[in-house]
Figure (cartoon, rainbow, N blue to C red):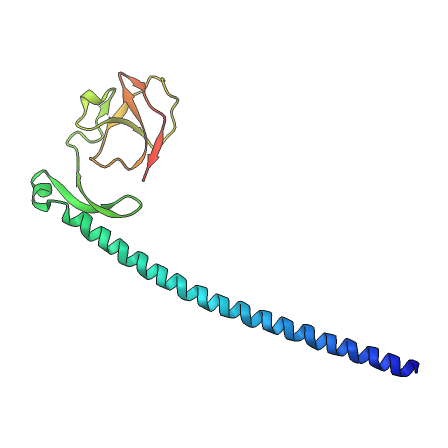
Length: 151
């Protein structure tokens, strides 16, 4: 009887092992199906995003009077993190040393470094009409704003 009980116990363990193996296989199949389905969704989302980006790009481009941009000495370029088109006009005094925005066509800036606010400083005149990059504004010979980064 003990052998029979042991035989039954062994059979139950084998059956339990088979059930566990089948559950693992089912889990793996379900996981792979989920990956495939989610991958499909992301490609659809990517396609929608790309289509929307192209639409926004074309809309931004159509809002620019390219002849007027050229007449003002500018060129249309994709700018910023979103790479949307804009009329970029280089300032004639770009890079000139300054201590106040009144000395520049654009702003008087300290670019690409952190400077304490209210510190005496000289900056340079803004290169173009785009606000992108890291800078602090100089007014009346002192740093007037915190360094901020725009993209």
